[in-house]
Image (cartoon, rainbow, N blue to C red; front, side):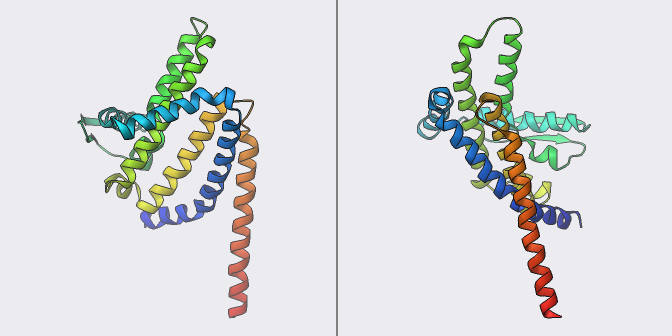
Length: 228
């Protein structure tokens, strides 16, 4: 019953995910249009991608971030951690219980991006870090590419038991996609506040979702009336 409910939730959110994708692409294109401001961020994306596919895939750092994020999400939800294992290509976290958030957190929480941002913010409390903004943008771009490439690889190059545990592949993929799009939009807003308008994007997604479901409901009602 729970799995069926989650499938229904995923189907209900599918139009929202598609519209969020469109709005996030619009935001990304606006940022890329500000080339002088975004060049370091773009360079970070490109450099990580080149290293990953050409030299080293960063599997152990990803496994570390993945399992630690599982563990932190579990602690945040009040779960008790029994054991944590981190290997070269795989790992696990044993806990007394879990939920969909705990299971899926590593797939949409960019751990190294958050860590880099915290270092930058904390350092700014003691010294002026504004001269290093371009370095910070490069680092964030590097780790955003790390997060998205590793997440895609983990989801689609292996049969992930996490997806089934969270409530099924359809539910998990829709939630991960939607969450990652929101995370990317928020990161871009934080980096380029004058270029990105999350309020406008949110309004567009909400209005579009309502319109799509209005069309679907009207179509179903019309078919039902005609059939009767």
